[in-house]
Length: 491
Image (cartoon, rainbow, N blue to C red; front, side):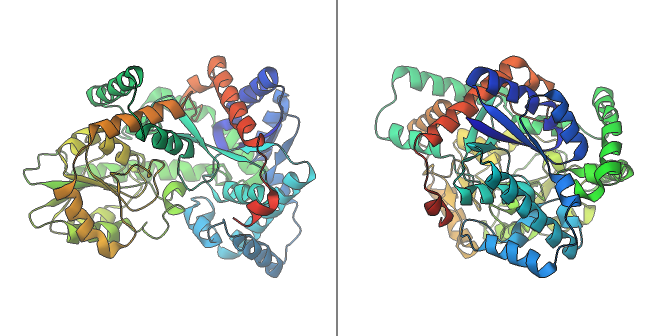
């Protein structure tokens, strides 16, 4: 078994331990893709990898590529049929989107050549990595073309519950299969009890997605331990910028180190202004309402999976027009976007007569429990609403979008009708909900996967063993029925 791990950002602290467990427990030969030269050196020093491929080093070595050749390579990738437009993935990449167009075209063409080189010369049995930036998306497309399985780790909205996708469209296929099977029969007493316990625990503890926990902290209240961890990363960041400069395209390490200091200070000021002058601080709604949580942007899970509904101001205006008279539309900022958006963004929303913008500190559980419907593009609030037996209207694909009670809005002109149906005709089906939760519990892996700087516990040996076992199980199941490359290339 040969595995290629895509090591972006802080995973340099995490993946060597995973690689060691893959080798020790499953005899795997593990290689890695690194986005910077210092990361490459760090991974090589760990001796956990057979090879480490340096993306920044590769890009620096490209000799003045011809624009016409670059465009032809990227256009050929678009013609494969299972890739979004290159412009779509550029818009969703928070690092590359800042660059001039000429530079972007040259870099992405170099990235495509990089993936072709490492996947064709010695193909791995599988690639494991997120698809959260343009580089990773091109890696997935190239692997797909070559018939190489690509496992995409995804957090569930529940702590220490994880799953893998093989296609970045968001659909959790193993859970979908389990749900279809369970829908055809009654749950046994053990399954029903476990699902019931899960729902009651979620509601009583007001469970939050683990990937949001780090964002709950206010930038106005200093966390000195967190600050110390960030300070310790400064030497590495300086070394990365000095060595690779703009060729580090997987994180902000490719930008000048002082830029992040400036942007952090600006976010703090903006957050203070918004909390003081813009956001409503209490729910206290006496009118019926629907709830729409703002999404992080740029963000691949939204901007690539649902690229044509990402103008959230326009979307909220359409929701405002679609709700029955007398209804409010409550909008809450995402905790991870504190200070990212200017006050003018929210003021455009507050000009709408029936829209109110709430502070990100307000508990989403309280909002959802009192809402008549929850609307989202691809956010985890849909999962919370389902568990509170509230109607969900989705504008983009959800990993659990196969659940029948979800209202999918594919044409914005249908929104008034869909909102009306959701508010007046939705009937909770608790038995079906128990089956959905049972399918979730049956399909998810119990392990932690996160930024090891924010959540150091993921680097513990017992957790890395669980990750290695999960990867090995997924790869084995996919390799047991090897796909035909020609067929994959036509998907």
